[in-house]
Amino acid sequence: MESGFFYPFRIPKQYSAGERRSEGLSLDLERFDDVEADDRASVIHLNSTYLDMIDRWFTIRGGMSSILALVITFILIVAYWFIVFLHALSDFEKGRMSLAVFVILFGVMSGLLFFVLMLAKRTIGREFFTYTHFPIRFNRKTRMIHVFRHNGPGGVLTVPWDQAYFHIGQGTQARSLLDLRGHVMDGDTVVDTFAVGNFFNTEEPIRQIWKFIVVYMEQGPQALPNDLFICTSTSTRWLNCFLQANAYCDIFLRIPLIKWVFVALIAGMRWLVMKSCREPAWPSEIVDESAIAPDDVYRWAEPAVSGALATDDKAWAALQARQVRRQKKH
Image (cartoon, rainbow, N blue to C red; front, side, top):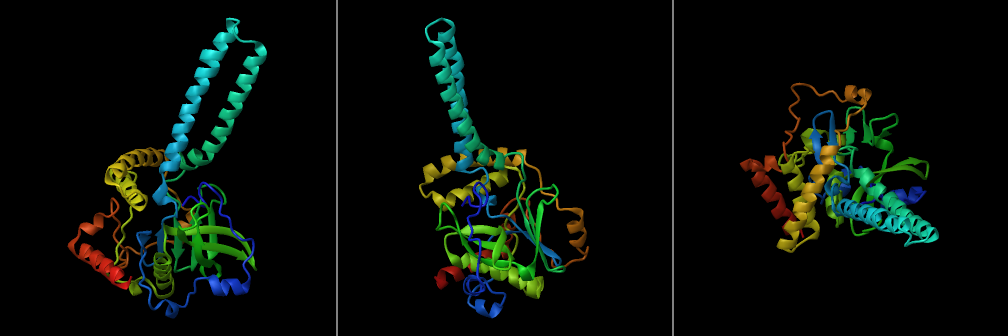
């Protein structure tokens, strides 16, 4: 779940040509005849020129890892201040503690605090004051993939659509969680890795996302199912944070009372995280090549908050129909 975000991707350094053929996801749509193209709430922008998808970690932003890191750090700072400055220093000044004991206590507590702060920095530093999301753009006009990482020099990874190697990746800590994983290859050697869209605990949704992307890139937006719409919004407003927190807790928590306690905690934390972050901004050259025609009939509507477009009767009926088809299939 946190692979590639709080922790670097653990990837093989090499994939042989045979492994890529046997394990990779094919561009041949005939191999996916039994798979229904679906973005599975991963698309945030779609038009005739490009589609943008959320990063694998968008759903977990402001989650329990961040809450625990923040709480533990706060508790330790308070404990450090109380033990070292209010207790030990006072005893030392009054002669009730020797210099040697004070120095040892100060060193141990400072070392512990430093260690925890370094661990927390990996989590809190990745969350706060960064970006609301890290989009992946598939430009079908230029046939390029752009992976946003930051706004500075070298902040966007770019790889030709035909040269990227895609497969179903596994989480590092939670290996049951799967995602659509892309690799930039130099021969048989992996030189960079990125993940696309939401993660799931079965392969079927990943294959649906892959087929959605392939249909778009190879056949165009007109070939996509006409009962799909954009479900996910990257807005930082409170309602959106609450809806995302609810979706996050639906995955892991089934007991209603406990779930709603965590929804409230995560929604608040997510709101703080998102409000501290800025919107990603593509470099000017990518913006220029991603120009959208004013009369683009294939530009999908974008919801103000996640799920808002589902309030439309036709969209809701299409959503229910897809759910019924999935249940029958399984």
